[in-house]
Image (tube, rainbow, N blue to C red; front, side):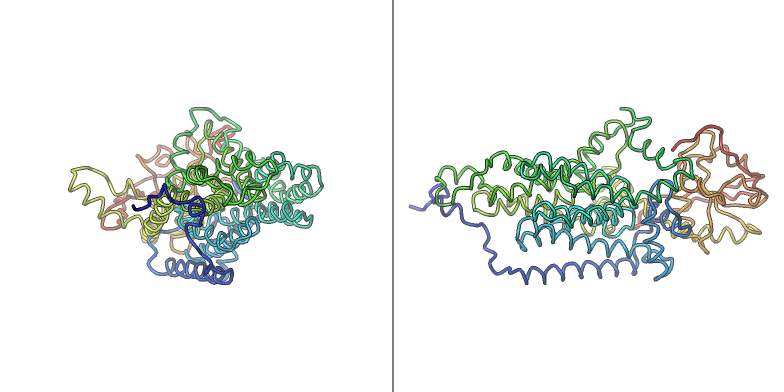
Length: 571
């Protein structure tokens, strides 16, 4: 009679699903280096040879900031501008040069991921697995190419977590100084990094063995060191009417927040989308497993595999290797989940952008890798999870080329429409649509400006258009933002902080311009600000043989000036 799976002994059920004895620490290091180097140089190739996407609006804006280095800026600290300026001084003011720092910071963050995982769980194999798992997440694939505030912010968040782990679990004091330094540097990228300390405090409160550290000088020293780095931001804001404070308060819902502004369900959906639905389930299960594991350990050592009765071995997942590993998993939960919960809460009263919770996934992805490794420790539990893991890998492999160029899906959409008689527009699924066509728009505007007489300028409806045209128009001129001058004024931006970008300055009077609109008809304020306005043909942007968007531009003659509406303005 053939034995079924139910006839397998408890010892056999408790054997590892995969035996990876051949994967030595040295080989793990070699694989890590190969993966990171291949990723880095393939992205360099991607950026330098027919890259299908132009700079995002944020990237172009930060580049424009880098031409005007300052203590801080309207919505963010100065770090991203200084990093971009350093790269552009080395490689020129080009799209690849703007993005090279993102590639380097992505590699550095992967190395910190490896080091932290190995520090917490003592396994090079698990550390390598955590790095590889990150390479299958669409959000991280995109983030490794785009040079926004996120790469330096994410890197500093990772280093804070790494040095805190050394301080807590190796019981050392010196790492707290580095926690403070990197939290401070991260603050110069994005103010939200100070919320990292909230996750730390939560962990020190809930972990009995670490609670005493809450009253030791180390964590407090780190916090006060980080606050020293706020000085340039505070000085800049004191000189500019506390613009950043007003902006952040408005963005986070602390000022003017309301349920009508919230996007809770959209936020949840966006997070599932950028992580992947299968991996999202694994992360949720990993969090629950880690919390339950800490509740189950009462200071007792786990039973040896041979002592586990057959019924338990068949139907219950094995516990983690030790109570200490459960503690360390809880550390990852507290750092990541606390920050995610903050974003979740404010999504009830304000619009939370899809990238805001990104740092939470630094520790949650390591936790997911640990959870998968625990399930692989015996055949039974691995059978439950192997389909989920393989599906995550397959989805990551499929999504990687799509994230780099969504137009690869356009032929599939057109075939789908032909077969099922649907009317799905390729532009509706083009997640990189906002990054397309800016170089083309810049070329068209450059041609128009040549025929507009002496010193024509570029005027834009939106601040991102203002930044994009500054980068892509010939000669990379200073461009101007009109949105905050409308009767129904759009929010302020850095362009409202610079005196030489004001639209009420005498130096602009009488000059001709190209106006770049957005969406519907031209606002009434633009024709009123010029002697004469002419609409030009729309500029189609084509990707994958499909028109994915159009730009609207106008010739404008004889600028008469614009005055900002009275009132405090929208931050």
